[in-house]
Length: 538
Image (cartoon, rainbow, N blue to C red; front, side, top):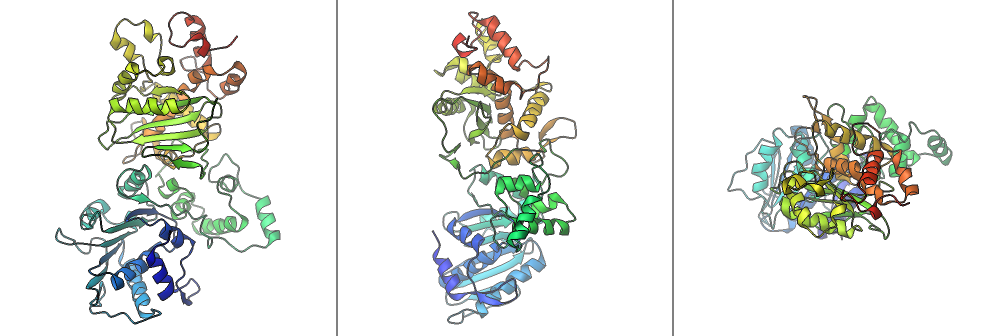
């Protein structure tokens, strides 16, 4: 639904277009989408020059002209950008298609409107300190990724905006991963914090397309560069985002301007959320079979589901990573179809205690046809597992190692539940995930893709998230793929054999099909914890 401010902008404002012509201000496609998605607190990762700041400048001017006691503030990253914004506001006011605006103060940073007792301030990050006594009714933090010390500056500014009545907008292209802007954007992506995420990719903007004749279009699409194995190739991008010939030519021209620096292109013209936040150096997951789809939908506060799932008769597997529930690391469930290895769900929260997480896990697993569950047993995971052990959920569908049921000591039985990651098992699990996610797996979560893009080999040789980033979804997915062979034992032989070739066989890997089948055969009647009907059918 469009805002009342849109009607005023399009009725009264004029703007200089990219051909240097003065024209009525008709919102472009990106601005219309932004207006329709309006929220009082928004964070907007975006491609370059889609008109985001122009829209908010006009919106704030409308508010100053029509709303009493408006205190609008726009803060940019550099002096030149600030001057351009001020010039744009001045142009709006001088070229109104209606009564001329009454202005009192007008200097290099501030314009005041005596009729409404309102003020519009435009400045550079760090140039002015906003104190505790200041009230800002409307704040635009523009290109915050390029502010000096954005965390400290934002702390003072954001506190000046009333939570219930104020408008707080953060917009920027990306500037690396693990920094303040990346962190608040990822929190919004997870549905945590107060900001609504609104991502504006380059490929949905009609202006980012070169004109082509039908004959040229056929020629371009017949000679695309690269293959589907390379996630940045033309072939892969056309497959994922349905790019047309004009968009391919636009991208080629821009890449040449960037001296074929793919990371720079992705940062300035992102196609997906994680493209905004390029990792310095090389991450572990070079290729990820990510398929964006409108069928990936948030169904409640914590859960995303691929529309159409769960399906009757399908077998699902769930991998879990457990956080402390103190708004730092998150507890995550990643849900996949066992046969297709397609991601069908993702549950995430940083507020649920580890013991309470168990009930959420069993609830989700029950919904997904009593899925097979594996929980990482390290740290807080042991508490979740202890609750799972006491639950009424079928115990043979909770992953465990060895003959846990035969252990007389309850502590020993609990220690055999779940998936423990160690310095030896973690590389195996991540390597398995890395192999599968290139082609066999299909993921739909922007969050999982983003955390994979920031998962690196650290300076000490260990594997983990880049400094300032998180890997909760990565570890949950790694657990999920690690236990898929065990979950697949419920499939008929003919279906299970199709999956077997996807997994690397290793003598010291207890999680291969051969190892599982051998244990199941040996344990029939021996209390291994997987009933005969759950294993191989004769």
